[in-house]
Amino acid sequence: MYPRETISSGPIILRPAVEADIPAVARACADPLTQRFIPALPDPYTEDDARYWLMEICEERWRTGGAEFIIADAATGELDGVMGLHLPDRFGNVEAGYWVAPWARRKGVASAALRAVAEWAFEQGVPRVHLVAEMENVASQKVALAAGFRHEGLQRGGGPIRGGGRADMALFGRLPGDSGEPIGAFLPFLPEGGLTDGVVAITMLTAGDAPAYQALASMPDVVRYRVPPEAPPFAETLYRCAGAGYRWLIGVQAEMAIRDAATGAFAGDIQLSHLTPPMREAMVGYSLHPDFRGRGLVTRAVNLLADWAFAQAGLRRLISGTNPENLASQAVLERAGFTRLGTQKEYLPGPDGTWTDNVEWLRLR
Ligand SMILES: CC(C)(COP(=O)(O)OP(=O)(O)OC[C@H]1O[C@@H](n2cnc3c(N)ncnc32)[C@H](O)[C@@H]1OP(=O)(O)O)[C@@H](O)C(=O)NCCC(=O)NCCS
Image (cartoon, rainbow, N blue to C red; front, side):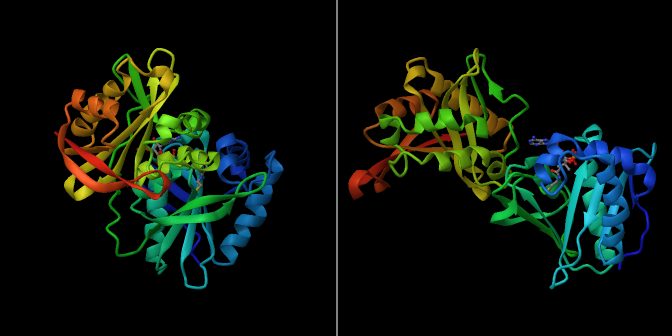
């Protein structure tokens, strides 16, 4: 059992809960984002629920070998959130869980509290602390990395969704021997609002883009140059769009929408894939809906992305590949400053089990 003590960590403290915390716990747990990502919370959430949590659940947690701390502002004493440690599993591993109240978010509270509780747990002899965050909960995944937790994988169907169904859960873990240094993403996120040159804008894909992405990915002349050359099922598109932030954060792929800057309309997609950190290299790919073609939008989007990739994201090589018959795409790359390198024989899956050559392109920083 853990000692019921207060942990001090710079501007915050972690302390056992007291009755006076009930109104703030109730307000924070009624917040839609807290409700969205902690599906076990009652809905609606009332002060009676907060009282039950404090008097029964917290007490039980401490008594049976877990911990449940209030995160509070060290200067004002105001409640910022909650940080808990579940009971150890059969191998002694301990799972952390947390929320931060809407009024205290985006100030580093969760990252600081998670770091503090993990280091405190290691002092108590815990051999490993881990946490799971829903694939769409990018804020919580950033918290894990900022607190020195490493991404360890994705548990398919690992957690419940409010209202039914299961969500994939990203798993992060920290060991006592880890440095604890914040872990940076290979590619930073785009600035708030994305990138724009005044004519096109590029923004990270989100679940809301799925219908427009699906319409684009089903156009015959887009399907022809997809790898493999097939239209995706809508469920796959939705999963791709909803998980774009997660895959970006863990360095798998950066997937964006190309938009008409004036209207915000979805015009196409552009992505950095094949991320190769040691070479600081990525592959650019794109497609544009026919309604938006003939205005140079893709060339603008490639230039915008390349300028950001070289100046802000630390890349030094952008590669691309085109089907030899795709002259429009080759013209885009030439206009965007890429050099044609050569041809890879029978590289791309074509229709009906055939294989197609791939023309290789490069733009250096
Ligand atoms: C997740 C949560 C605990 C984060 O608390 P917090 O104190 O705001 O976290 P931090 O300030 O330490 O870090 C959050 C990071 O996520 C970023 N972030 C916040 N919302 C984001 C979003 N929608 N998309 C991407 N990043 C986001 C913040 O900018 C910050 O990153 P930065 O430091 O690079 O700027 C809080 O949002 C919350 O309580 N959510 C609801 C409950 C929940 O999800 N709990 C965790 C379940 S696993």
